[in-house]
Image (cartoon, rainbow, N blue to C red; front, side):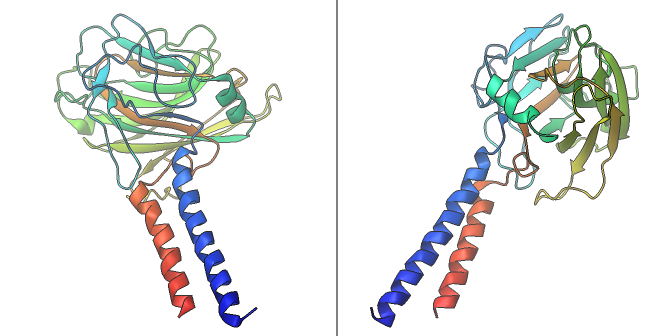
Length: 302
């Protein structure tokens, strides 16, 4: 075998490895165990929609009025996004939308001692109102029973972790986003506790949550940490802005539920077993990884 033949085979293997890297990077986009981008017809009702991945059944509604619709999609930095959003801009009544994840998704997530979630949030609801929205998203074994405040009640005895808005004014007509904070929540057998109050202003926020579970029934502590990502390259901040430590029963975690007593937008809901699976860069960013690898190979060949 000639040296040229050896080089060509070696080069082909290197290119194959680089292409594998590109494909592998692209596959990260499907790494979240549960993913909802609200990629539905704009203006249509959220209730009854059944897209996304990792779910079992469609979105259902509860509360006085479940009039959430598909709004314009949110975006942040290099986060890979698609579709619309879960929008509540009509303050008539109150709304709850909930969806059950599949048994496979539940088993995958609860097999890990640490799971991650991320969500894009906007306090305005798209109609100019900002404060006192009190919209909250949870992941747990229960849905919200109604939507009325930052501590919106869950169904009896429910356990869940989540994130939501809290307003500082009782009057709901203000447009001042400096009155809106983001906080963490935990429901332990139906009793709510909250922590943190970061005020991002009237901007889209990417919130990442880390949940560390202790063994079920061990009496140990389960911990929720929330991070507000400000780096467009999706790097996690060095410290959490909110932390809740409690001892709840996570064995039945299989429901994503959103309470909207007033206005808000939620989008790009991801739940996964790694940080990377819930902070997925857009495809163009992934392609740069592969292009860099190919450029390196060309340099080596010379």
